[in-house]
Image 1 (cartoon, rainbow, N blue to C red):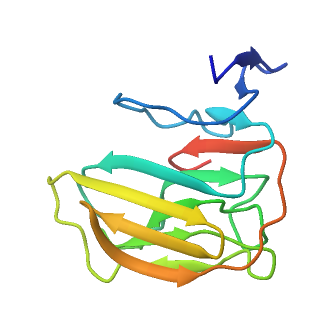
Image 2 (cartoon, rainbow, N blue to C red):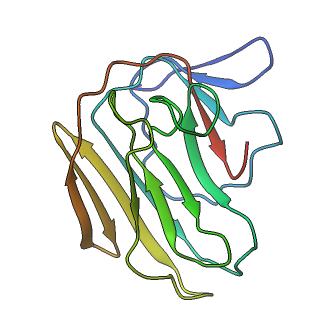
Image 3 (tube, rainbow, N blue to C red):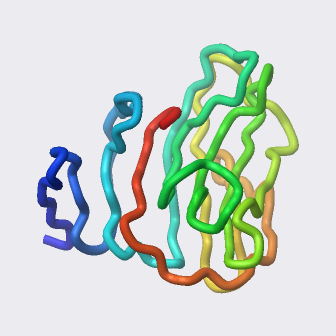
Length: 159
């Protein structure tokens, strides 16, 4: 298998090789303060794909998924990537940090409709980062260098 799991001391699943999941499954929110997984030595080039159905907006920032070495802003490693809803909206805020700007971010140019499913893709390869919604390219930018990271925690929802 390309993925192997071990249990860390606190029973958090730890991915020991290439991190990927193929297929569909409903994911539930992380238990507060506990990551869903820890990625050992993740690649600096990656693709993240998921489907989301916004059901309401909220007054505060709402985290959807966060890959972090610790914290959620604004150093490199604190959003590799991180995806949030802007306060009071269903507009996505997407961070794909790099060495010179840990908060290298993009705002989706529109809000997502409530009660509608969206396929979101974030690709970071070489010097480009691209964001797709339902297969349509909505943002493509140049991204700086990214040093390899270790022990990247994965949170579904707010850490």
